[in-house]
Image (tube, rainbow, N blue to C red; front, side, top):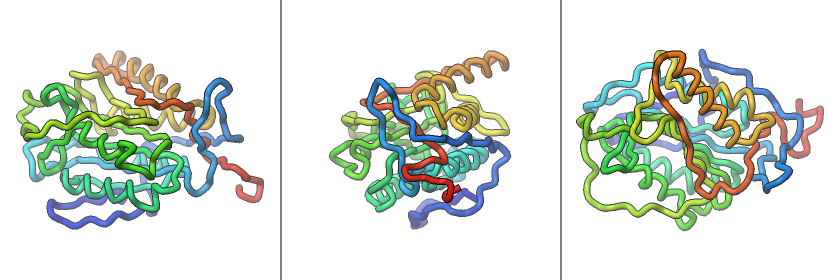
Length: 289
């Protein structure tokens, strides 16, 4: 199984996931037949075979050590994302039910490792309960501890993360963004964290600030549509345009089900076009098929 579940206090090892991925939500990922470049703006390099990207997938499903409700159906999100990014040529790192401390230890280790030193792209998907605390976006870990979004972002500031400097980075946050004080979660303690200066980053949110994000037995609505649209379009469409397609698909899905969820994204000096070029790399020939 692609889920490594851990208990608080357990020492974790950073290890690439290489096992077979089982997913009921598999979509065929269309392959590129050339390295895509934008004709009017610079394009991020995505042309190597073995250093195409790194996915850090963290899914908090069970809250045995906290008062939060378990996120039934969320395991499907991990399976679907791992399958997608394996097809995109990424190295995979997957964990579930991490405490806040475990999350940050693993993240910092990964950002300083050889895995990210030469990678062309970094994607982090963090799925859990979330919300607003003092108008700041927060996420809940398996032990009930809360981290602000900017606390996570600080690990990616240029002065803190040399490995990913000038590389495209994508955060995927498919959690609620409502008021956490209405849900009985613990408050953030103490120190104010300044918002870091970030570059080459896109943050994808499943819903608008102040609103909930929906999930069913197949997983979160946002991840389902993210995987479907990436599988169908990553071969010839730049990433920001795919994100807009996801927004349209979400609007249609929610309208059909009588729900309201409007995803959005934030561009943090993501100044070039990003194409994933699945199945194609520089120097590829017929012998590589």
